[in-house]
Length: 246
Image 1 (tube, rainbow, N blue to C red):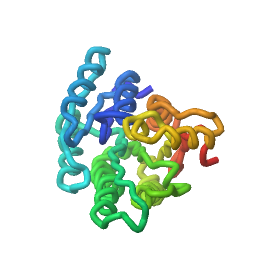
Image 2: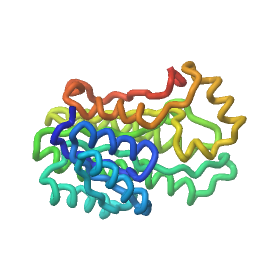
Image 3: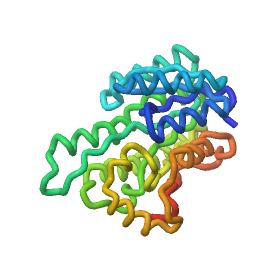
Protein backbone atom coordinates (compact mmCIF):
# COMPACT_ATOMS: atom_id res chain seq x y z
CA UNK A 1 0.00 0.00 0.00
CA UNK A 2 2.82 2.43 0.89
CA UNK A 3 5.73 0.19 -0.04
CA UNK A 4 9.01 2.11 -0.28
CA UNK A 5 7.42 5.52 0.31
CA UNK A 6 9.32 7.92 2.57
CA UNK A 7 6.93 9.47 5.10
CA UNK A 8 7.63 12.25 7.60
CA UNK A 9 5.23 12.22 10.57
CA UNK A 10 5.34 15.09 13.06
CA UNK A 11 4.42 14.65 16.71
CA UNK A 12 4.83 10.88 16.43
CA UNK A 13 5.73 10.12 20.05
CA UNK A 14 2.28 9.10 21.20
CA UNK A 15 -1.42 8.84 20.42
CA UNK A 16 -2.53 9.38 16.85
CA UNK A 17 0.97 10.17 15.56
CA UNK A 18 2.36 6.93 16.99
CA UNK A 19 -0.49 4.91 15.45
CA UNK A 20 0.12 6.53 12.06
CA UNK A 21 3.85 5.73 12.21
CA UNK A 22 3.18 2.10 13.14
CA UNK A 23 0.62 1.66 10.38
CA UNK A 24 2.79 3.31 7.73
CA UNK A 25 5.69 1.04 8.67
CA UNK A 26 3.37 -1.97 8.53
CA UNK A 27 2.40 -0.96 4.98
CA UNK A 28 6.05 -0.79 3.92
CA UNK A 29 6.82 2.91 4.31
CA UNK A 30 10.21 4.21 5.42
CA UNK A 31 9.13 6.32 8.36
CA UNK A 32 10.73 9.51 9.68
CA UNK A 33 9.25 10.10 13.13
CA UNK A 34 9.51 13.60 14.54
CA UNK A 35 9.39 14.49 18.21
CA UNK A 36 10.11 17.50 20.37
CA UNK A 37 10.89 16.09 23.81
CA UNK A 38 9.35 12.59 24.13
CA UNK A 39 12.63 10.71 23.57
CA UNK A 40 11.73 7.61 25.63
CA UNK A 41 8.45 7.20 23.74
CA UNK A 42 10.20 7.64 20.39
CA UNK A 43 12.84 5.06 21.26
CA UNK A 44 10.08 2.59 22.16
CA UNK A 45 8.31 3.38 18.87
CA UNK A 46 11.47 2.82 16.83
CA UNK A 47 12.03 -0.50 18.56
CA UNK A 48 8.44 -1.58 17.84
CA UNK A 49 8.78 -0.68 14.17
CA UNK A 50 12.14 -2.38 13.77
CA UNK A 51 11.05 -5.51 15.64
CA UNK A 52 8.15 -5.88 13.22
CA UNK A 53 10.49 -5.64 10.22
CA UNK A 54 9.90 -1.97 9.45
CA UNK A 55 12.33 0.86 8.84
CA UNK A 56 12.34 4.16 10.72
CA UNK A 57 14.53 6.98 11.96
CA UNK A 58 13.79 9.72 14.50
CA UNK A 59 14.51 13.44 14.12
CA UNK A 60 14.05 15.92 16.95
CA UNK A 61 12.56 19.27 15.94
CA UNK A 62 10.19 21.89 17.32
CA UNK A 63 8.03 22.46 14.25
CA UNK A 64 6.72 25.76 15.64
CA UNK A 65 10.15 27.18 14.74
CA UNK A 66 10.68 27.49 10.99
CA UNK A 67 14.39 26.74 11.10
CA UNK A 68 13.75 23.47 12.92
CA UNK A 69 10.90 22.50 10.57
CA UNK A 70 13.24 23.13 7.63
CA UNK A 71 15.93 21.01 9.30
CA UNK A 72 13.45 18.17 9.80
CA UNK A 73 12.70 17.97 6.07
CA UNK A 74 16.35 18.43 5.11
CA UNK A 75 17.47 15.63 7.43
CA UNK A 76 14.81 13.31 6.03
CA UNK A 77 16.01 14.02 2.49
CA UNK A 78 19.63 13.62 3.53
CA UNK A 79 18.88 10.17 4.92
CA UNK A 80 16.40 8.80 2.38
CA UNK A 81 16.87 11.04 -0.66
CA UNK A 82 13.24 12.13 -0.92
CA UNK A 83 9.98 12.83 0.91
CA UNK A 84 6.87 11.22 -0.56
CA UNK A 85 4.42 11.85 2.28
CA UNK A 86 4.17 14.50 4.99
CA UNK A 87 1.75 14.01 7.87
CA UNK A 88 1.34 17.14 9.99
CA UNK A 89 0.17 15.68 13.28
CA UNK A 90 2.03 17.71 15.93
CA UNK A 91 -0.45 19.57 18.11
CA UNK A 92 -1.14 20.80 21.62
CA UNK A 93 -4.05 22.11 23.68
CA UNK A 94 -4.16 24.95 26.22
CA UNK A 95 -7.86 25.01 27.04
CA UNK A 96 -9.65 27.76 28.94
CA UNK A 97 -12.74 29.90 28.68
CA UNK A 98 -12.40 32.99 26.51
CA UNK A 99 -12.24 35.50 29.36
CA UNK A 100 -9.61 33.44 31.17
CA UNK A 101 -7.44 32.54 28.19
CA UNK A 102 -4.05 34.23 28.21
CA UNK A 103 -2.39 35.62 25.11
CA UNK A 104 0.55 33.28 25.76
CA UNK A 105 -1.71 30.20 25.70
CA UNK A 106 -3.46 31.41 22.56
CA UNK A 107 -0.15 32.06 20.81
CA UNK A 108 1.42 28.76 21.86
CA UNK A 109 -1.41 26.71 20.38
CA UNK A 110 -1.39 28.72 17.15
CA UNK A 111 2.39 28.45 16.89
CA UNK A 112 2.45 24.66 17.16
CA UNK A 113 -0.80 23.62 15.51
CA UNK A 114 -1.11 26.19 12.73
CA UNK A 115 2.31 27.69 12.08
CA UNK A 116 4.00 24.32 12.56
CA UNK A 117 1.80 22.85 9.84
CA UNK A 118 2.55 25.84 7.60
CA UNK A 119 6.32 25.56 8.09
CA UNK A 120 6.43 21.83 7.41
CA UNK A 121 4.22 22.12 4.31
CA UNK A 122 6.35 24.96 2.99
CA UNK A 123 9.63 23.06 3.21
CA UNK A 124 8.24 19.66 2.21
CA UNK A 125 6.61 21.26 -0.83
CA UNK A 126 10.02 22.49 -1.97
CA UNK A 127 11.15 18.87 -2.16
CA UNK A 128 7.90 17.54 -3.62
CA UNK A 129 7.82 20.15 -6.36
CA UNK A 130 11.20 18.93 -7.60
CA UNK A 131 9.89 15.35 -7.48
CA UNK A 132 6.67 16.43 -9.24
CA UNK A 133 4.71 14.26 -6.82
CA UNK A 134 3.88 13.98 -3.15
CA UNK A 135 1.10 13.76 -0.61
CA UNK A 136 0.45 16.01 2.38
CA UNK A 137 -2.06 15.04 5.06
CA UNK A 138 -2.83 17.56 7.80
CA UNK A 139 -4.45 16.46 11.06
CA UNK A 140 -7.21 18.93 11.88
CA UNK A 141 -10.15 18.24 14.23
CA UNK A 142 -13.93 18.29 14.20
CA UNK A 143 -13.51 21.17 16.65
CA UNK A 144 -12.19 23.15 13.68
CA UNK A 145 -15.57 22.58 12.02
CA UNK A 146 -17.93 22.93 14.97
CA UNK A 147 -16.09 24.93 17.64
CA UNK A 148 -16.04 23.91 21.30
CA UNK A 149 -16.44 25.67 24.64
CA UNK A 150 -13.07 26.41 26.20
CA UNK A 151 -11.12 25.78 23.00
CA UNK A 152 -11.11 29.11 21.19
CA UNK A 153 -7.39 28.81 20.47
CA UNK A 154 -7.50 25.13 19.49
CA UNK A 155 -10.57 25.56 17.28
CA UNK A 156 -8.99 28.56 15.57
CA UNK A 157 -5.81 26.60 14.88
CA UNK A 158 -7.65 23.57 13.51
CA UNK A 159 -10.02 25.65 11.38
CA UNK A 160 -6.93 27.41 10.06
CA UNK A 161 -5.41 24.05 9.14
CA UNK A 162 -8.48 23.31 7.02
CA UNK A 163 -8.21 26.68 5.26
CA UNK A 164 -4.51 26.15 4.59
CA UNK A 165 -5.16 22.62 3.34
CA UNK A 166 -7.61 23.82 0.70
CA UNK A 167 -5.41 26.75 -0.35
CA UNK A 168 -2.22 24.71 -0.67
CA UNK A 169 -4.13 21.92 -2.44
CA UNK A 170 -5.08 24.44 -5.15
CA UNK A 171 -1.51 25.71 -5.41
CA UNK A 172 0.20 22.34 -5.66
CA UNK A 173 -2.33 20.29 -7.65
CA UNK A 174 -0.88 21.26 -11.07
CA UNK A 175 2.42 19.65 -10.02
CA UNK A 176 0.89 16.35 -8.97
CA UNK A 177 0.88 17.00 -5.22
CA UNK A 178 -2.27 16.30 -3.21
CA UNK A 179 -3.11 18.00 0.08
CA UNK A 180 -5.89 16.74 2.33
CA UNK A 181 -6.95 16.95 5.97
CA UNK A 182 -8.24 14.39 8.44
CA UNK A 183 -10.52 15.71 11.19
CA UNK A 184 -10.71 13.30 14.13
CA UNK A 185 -13.47 13.50 16.68
CA UNK A 186 -13.10 12.08 20.19
CA UNK A 187 -10.30 9.52 20.03
CA UNK A 188 -8.93 7.46 22.91
CA UNK A 189 -5.58 9.16 23.63
CA UNK A 190 -3.68 10.65 26.56
CA UNK A 191 -5.47 13.91 25.81
CA UNK A 192 -8.98 12.47 26.16
CA UNK A 193 -7.99 10.26 29.11
CA UNK A 194 -7.75 13.44 31.19
CA UNK A 195 -11.37 14.41 30.57
CA UNK A 196 -13.84 14.09 33.49
CA UNK A 197 -16.04 10.99 33.38
CA UNK A 198 -19.25 13.07 33.22
CA UNK A 199 -17.88 14.90 30.16
CA UNK A 200 -16.96 11.60 28.50
CA UNK A 201 -20.46 10.23 29.11
CA UNK A 202 -22.03 13.35 27.62
CA UNK A 203 -19.82 13.28 24.54
CA UNK A 204 -20.36 9.57 23.91
CA UNK A 205 -24.11 10.19 24.06
CA UNK A 206 -23.71 12.80 21.29
CA UNK A 207 -21.76 10.46 18.99
CA UNK A 208 -24.02 8.45 16.65
CA UNK A 209 -21.70 5.41 16.88
CA UNK A 210 -21.87 5.71 20.71
CA UNK A 211 -18.14 5.32 21.39
CA UNK A 212 -14.83 7.09 21.17
CA UNK A 213 -12.63 6.19 18.23
CA UNK A 214 -9.21 4.59 18.52
CA UNK A 215 -5.98 5.97 17.10
CA UNK A 216 -5.58 3.19 14.53
CA UNK A 217 -8.89 4.23 12.95
CA UNK A 218 -7.50 7.71 12.31
CA UNK A 219 -4.29 6.12 11.02
CA UNK A 220 -6.36 4.11 8.55
CA UNK A 221 -7.83 7.26 7.04
CA UNK A 222 -4.38 8.86 6.81
CA UNK A 223 -2.91 5.72 5.20
CA UNK A 224 -5.67 5.77 2.58
CA UNK A 225 -5.03 9.42 1.70
CA UNK A 226 -1.30 8.69 1.45
CA UNK A 227 -1.83 5.75 -0.89
CA UNK A 228 -2.23 5.60 -4.65
CA UNK A 229 -5.91 4.78 -4.11
CA UNK A 230 -6.35 8.48 -3.23
CA UNK A 231 -4.47 9.93 -6.21
CA UNK A 232 -7.55 11.82 -7.44
CA UNK A 233 -8.50 13.24 -4.04
CA UNK A 234 -7.25 16.67 -2.98
CA UNK A 235 -8.45 19.60 -0.91
CA UNK A 236 -10.77 17.38 1.14
CA UNK A 237 -11.50 17.05 4.85
CA UNK A 238 -12.14 13.46 5.94
CA UNK A 239 -13.95 13.35 9.28
CA UNK A 240 -13.14 10.37 11.50
CA UNK A 241 -15.59 11.13 14.27
CA UNK A 242 -18.25 8.43 14.54
CA UNK A 243 -20.74 10.79 12.91
CA UNK A 244 -20.37 13.50 15.54
CA UNK A 245 -20.23 16.43 13.11
CA UNK A 246 -22.19 15.04 10.17
